[in-house]
Length: 232
Image (cartoon, rainbow, N blue to C red; front, side, top):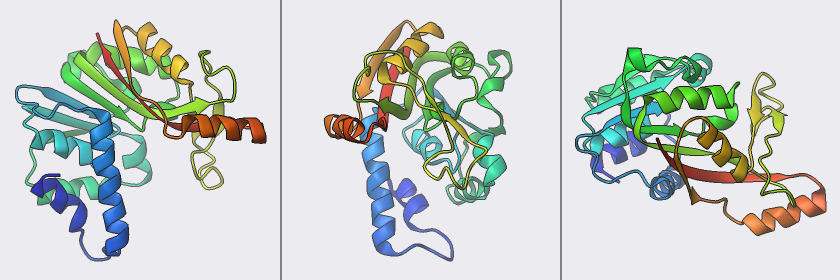
């Protein structure tokens, strides 16, 4: 992790979390960076970070040399505010651009096209997943990296299923939030249908077979994080 990114995570303002919690957060983001497979050198690349929230990956792409980074968000910046993003932007003296924009409203004529598009922890919140992916395909020049919850049923994992659930991990607190969690097959098929010609699975959920066993015992499908890389 770079000194600047380390500063962003490990030196918050007043009310800083205990060191043990802080260390767990850094470890989690380090692991995500490894699994995502974002190119180490982004010199000459443009980057669009969809659902940027606090901007961690936007600033990381800037650190890796991207010529242009645009962070967009609507849901998180509406619900939770964008104070964290703006504070980090100021602290890092960042050149990252930002727009209050919904993924369903992406327009290549307005924002342009980008070599790298990040869709991290967003897909399962989308109201209209295929329509949003079609918008994303139009603004992607080289590579889309999509990280999302994927469904792990005991059987039928190879079928393109997309059940919808009310809420996220805290369903009782977020009844307004509807989540669609696809099987990995469902995810890759939707990405292809939206206009990407090459789709590769970069990462499948951890403890996959154990979770499938739990799904059998509890008769409830489980989920985990999956990552795909897609190219136009």
